[in-house]
Length: 294
Image (cartoon, rainbow, N blue to C red; front, side, top):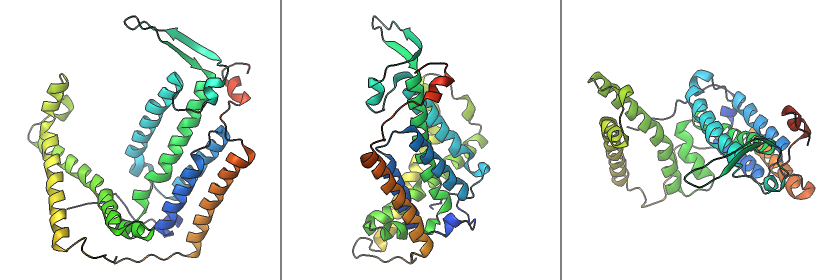
């Protein structure tokens, strides 16, 4: 049986919006920010995303694990990669005169790469982390603040073919179902004396020892998929276009919300092509933080 994310009614403004309006506005803001690297604009984008997060009414207890994963991903993977290697940024970073804070040449079997930390790399890492955190916050609140029964009708109402809309509905339910099966299996194996915390040894040994967890979860996922497929076949899914029980209707607040997304999109286009100030740069005050004269 499929389960859903931990959605609950909070009577917030965000939950009163049509889910289609929220998806459309989120994508408009996301596409608007893609070509821009200006640090101040990126900071504004992050602030807007956080404002929406606080409007959602979500608590720290509900989102603690999500925040841990997002921050770990952004800071450790993206942040360190940007600080050490400066990868993934615009060409302006390579054209800047670097202000080196630390530099070291390594010797790896005769290969001598030079790694350095510069003010420019730190500035780019901060900009990149604001971009990624803002994008994550913009979208990860959706499963917790949209009624799961409206997933399918929402995607269909956005013009997505109904088969794909139904597939998206199932996909949103599959992840929490998989998580539930994993933790249920882990608790059952612990009750039988399996020590999850003491999985030691080499890679092959570790894979062999976690088999009591992985095999039941994978088999349950396959069986659940077969059950869903059989149920859909019994109902002749795919023969004729189906209708949705739920109905969605735009209201004034939905048009206002979409209008905000359109304004942000138009403003970013104007900044990008009209004012041509989308390029990355390092503010003077950021140099001052490191005691460096630009």
